[in-house]
Amino acid sequence: QVQLVESGGGLVQPGGSLRLSCAASGISFSLSAMAWYRQAPGKQRELVATITDVANTNYADSVKGRFTISRENAKNTVYLQMNSLKPEDTAVYYCNTPFRIRSWGQGTQVTVSS
Image 1: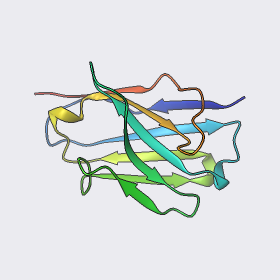
Image 2: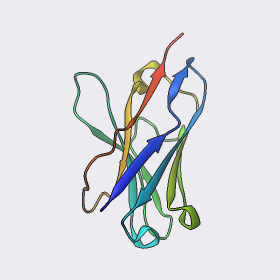
Image 3: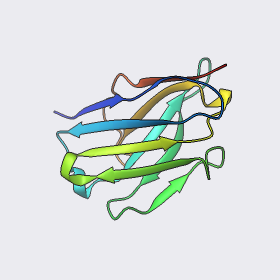
Image 4: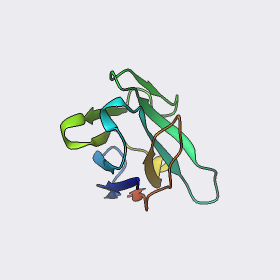
């Protein structure tokens, strides 16, 4: 049974930083590409960043240069370091395996507001 548990969200002022974590179980984590997605109110879920099994990364244009995705295979965990946050980054953030979407976790809320 696949389980994806996101954490680390919160309320932050514009320009601030947060680090999100996603703990995965039930998959061969070290062999799996992982990705972060987000869904803002009234909008469709969008892909934010991906990391392959060999740690190649890719980012949406809207977050390039501000967000960094990384992984720690020993902990079956993928991270998203978010810097220079903007109000438009406000969303629920989720992780998943991009080449085979699993059941979505509960996500973690990120709110960027002064």
